[in-house]
Length: 149
Image 1 (cartoon, rainbow, N blue to C red):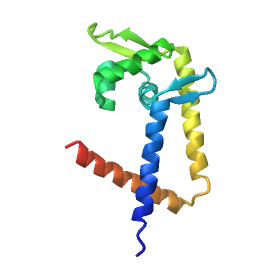
Image 2: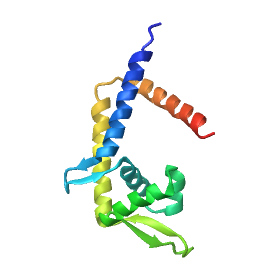
Image 3: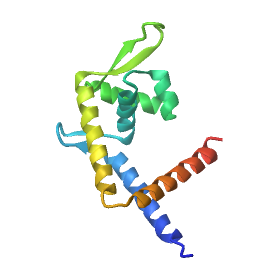
Image 4: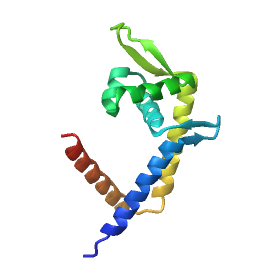
């Protein structure tokens, strides 16, 4: 059996470098010339997928230091994409919700993500897509077991 270990490792390192570069230089969004960090995009996705999320739940879901998340969250609040609202049941807590502009940017970013994935997968067979899914599932499983224990 032929092993592609070396090629896979090289591509994984290139992808990691690209992700670090994206995060360092921030991802430019054409409409308003705004730049988003990877964490900004992750927060926007969490708020969008959950429609409303408490600050504490956000921290639990993304598992990143509170101070770093607060900096990113304040950036998104200053851009008028997210608002903090007091929780009706517990006034000590707050919920994160989208503004109208936040919903708009979330929809545009989701479309861009979907279009990119569609572009990558369009020329692949179902079996190739299954192989990718199996690989990513295995990587996810191994990283969860290794780093979350």
